[in-house]
Each structure stands twice: as structure tokens, then as C-alpha cells.
Length: 302
Image (tube, rainbow, N blue to C red):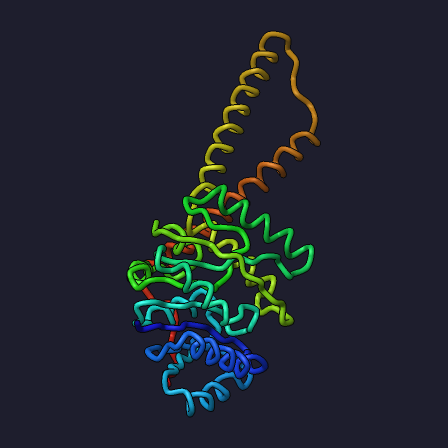
């Protein structure tokens, strides 16, 4: 059995050495001799790459892919996955919030499934982060054609045939978990303890970008909502206009009130701007896709 272990790094100088120590330990315990480790560095600005190159001196199975800048976790992850050749592929983060030793638990289940994945036993983040995280999962599963389990982790063990199908998805703005859970293979989630090691690399802006990419990649519902909302408002406005004309012609009662008019103009103006903004997000995604540019630029391979 050939195993590919795929991970990403971003400013991981403080954890990457310990990560490889834990990884070597579990590989030894499972008595795996035929394997490769692929690390995709997502534009680290600290000493992560230098440390990786030192580790490689005593780790012949290690392949390092260095991206030219920070493209984001999902793009880095899919880049490493595309390079993997193992009959089984193990995905995980290198920040040690996901312990490599959990591979043993995933191995126990993979024979009967096409892929098995980790689910956080309990989210270690703060109250506000947990609140908005729950909203994201509920909203995504409501509007999209794909349904993803709550509190998903990167940690996944998959068979090569799953990887082959994932390779066929060529979109530039990619939401990895959405694609993985929409391709229809037999799967199972495993509860895993995730530890919190410090400040997350996912800033608020990155989380918002991921949210909009996820929603707009898997659903056209926002566009449909504004279509039907516009249709309803137009119908109500038309009925109201007919009523006002009838009242004026029948009873000579005119409508006064600049304030009412101003409020209506502001309300509908804001609605139109919001609708144009949503439409613009979809147009931007189409624009990025038709240019057919590479998803990432690789600076170096080692």
C-alpha cells in the first residue's frame, strides 16, 4: 500500500518540527514503509520553508511545494492533493490542532468507505466564532446543493478514486469541503478531539471570503431570492399604483407626503444596490473562470 500524506503550512515555524516528529511516530506505529509526504507552503513569511528544507535532509520521502504567495488554505490543499499518487491519501493541517496519530482511527474505517473525515468533538474557538460558524453551516446547507457536516476538519483519509474525481474540478475559487461532500462517494465522519494551539491563520476577512466563495460556488439561491423579491415588490407597486389612480379618478384624492416618497426611494435604492452587489459577485466568479488562469503559481519544488 502506498500512502500519500498531504498537508499545508503558513507561518508554521513554531509547529512544523513537532508536526513531523508526531507524523514519524504514527508512521512507525502503523509500520508503513511505502509513503510520501507532500507539504504545500502557502507563502509563509517566517522561517517555515527553511525549516522544511532542513527536515528534508533526513526525510527522503518529503516533497515541498512552495507557492509564490498566500493563495489560501483550500487552494494550497488541492494543489498538494493534485500532486499525490498514493492508493490512500491522508489530508491534515500541520498546526498540530489535528494530531497525526488520529490516522490510526481513520485506518480502522477506510476499508468499508471511500473516504472518512474528522469532525470536531467540540469547537475550541470563542463564543462569537462558534456562533457565526454554526450560522455558516446552517446557511450553506440550506441554500446549496451540497450538504456538509457541521464542525468539519481538514483531516480526511480517502481512496485514490476519490482523489481522481476531485482532480476533475477545475474552478479557480474553490471550496474544498463543498466539492468533497457533493461527489457522492460512500463516507463516514469520525469524532476527533481538536486542540487549540493559538492564534488562527483564518482572519475575519479570510473567513468572509470563504463564506461568499462557498455560498456562490454551490448555490444560485441569492439570485433567485432577489428575482422573486423584485417580482413581489413590482406586483405590489403596480397594484398600489392602480389603487391610487382609481382613488384619484373616483374621489379626487391625491397622495401627499414627500417623506413617504423619500423613504420608499431609499428603501428600493438600497435593495437595488444590494441586488447588483450579489449579481456582481457571480459575474466576478465567471470572469475569473473564463480567463482560465492557473489556480496557484508554484515558486519552487524541492
